[in-house]
Length: 314
Ligand code: MEV
Image 1 (cartoon, rainbow, N blue to C red):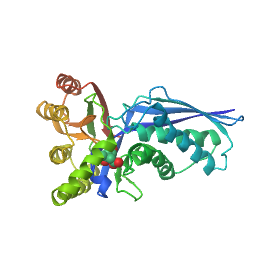
Image 2: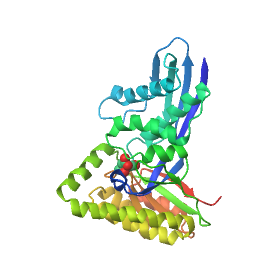
Image 3: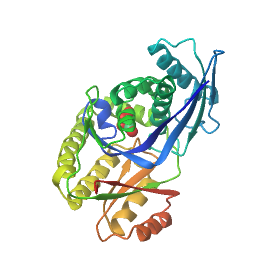
Image 4: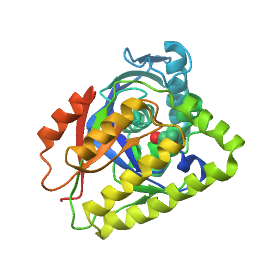
């Protein structure tokens, strides 16, 4: 019996949610304080077993069996890729990433499965190969994923991503960007919000496309800011992108309340992150912003959980 572990972090989008589905660029960063962890055992007696007691969530369109079937198919694809399709495998999945809260839980579980099975077989794949495989399961969960989630959690680095192209890792300049991620505690299925944006675009193509273009252009500007600009500049872009996401109808009163509180109480900028309608928002702290005080303010404004992450600073 061979035993190995696969791990992957959570993620947030700094810019480009929804626009990235239509081929515009997005920027995603890993959130290493949360993770999916998969224990893999290869067994000689064949068969597949998957234990994932906490994997029932809004990303799956049906019950627990619907939630795990794509993961079993993914495990099988990885074994077959290496000509090991007759191997038995037992997977035990644990994740601290909230499901359906815009933090990449589905992608992280899939990436952790691919990495765990590779480790158990003593094989290696590039991050891009890992994310391509993981995307198979993502497609089953929410129909039309852009691929940004699996790309960032497979690389575990900040990326500039355009659908269908190899992601580019972003080298952070001299500034350290500190973020708080505040979760409304309200789950929201990505496939549903993505479908609603599609329906809105079908009804009002010119208006929706102009918003998506603007988000895409801001992704390029924000990449330059991360490479060599200031936190103040990044904050301005984040605030502006939240306004556009509101126009697209993907924010919610809970998210807006958190974004307003973050900006009023010392953040340099804030926006919802992920598909929206629930899930999380991300706030950028200034050098003088007291993290504990802002966290307390966000809790008062309704945050159920708060995570922190940084970009740069060594
Ligand atoms: C990704 O975290 C959120 C969406 O952009 C969907 C996608 O890119 O597949 C809304």
